Length: 217
Image (cartoon, rainbow, N blue to C red):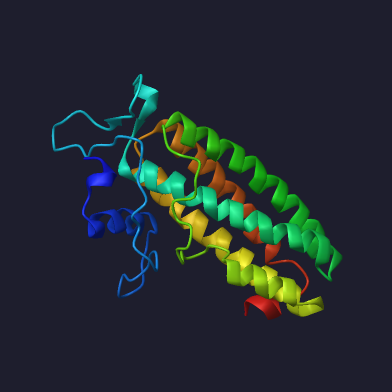
C-alpha cells in the first residue's frame, strides 16, 4: 500500500509508531495533518508474504522500503536540518566556551548525518523536500525556537540551547530505535544504529557542560 493512498489517520499513525513510547494518551505527532505525498512505493506485508516492498524503479533487495523506513528518514532529515540551525547560532553566540565548542562538534556530526540521510532518501526514491514543514514534531527545533534563540543573550541563550538540543537528541534517538526494531532496510537500520550511538555520547557530554544541571533540571 502506498502511503499516498493511506487514509489520513493511517498516515498519521505511521509517524506515531516511529515516536516510540508515547505518553498515557498516545497523543504525540504532527500538529497539522501529514498530507505530503510519498514517492517511494511501499507495501505492508501480509502474514506469510515476501517481506518489504519495492521502491519504484530498478528494485534490488537493498532497495526495499517499509512505511517505517520512509517515515523515519523523512522525519530524521528535517530534525537534523533544524538542529544544525540552532547549533550554528550556539557555535557563534554561546556565552560559555565549552558550550560553543560542543555546538561546533555536534554541528559537524549532524551535518555528516544529513549527508547520509539525503543519500538514503535518494536511494529510496523519496524527495529531498521537508514533508514535515510546518508540523510541530516532538524534538524538532522550531522556527519559534530559533526566534527565541536570536533574541536571547548570555546564560539565557545557553540554557535555551541546552534544553532544545537535549530534547532533539533524546527524541531522535528514540525514533531511531524504532527504526532499528521495525525498519525493513538494512542500510536504514545501520544508519539508525549509528545515530543512536552518536546521540547517547552527545547526551552524556551535554549533561556535563557548565550550566546543564540548572538548565535541564
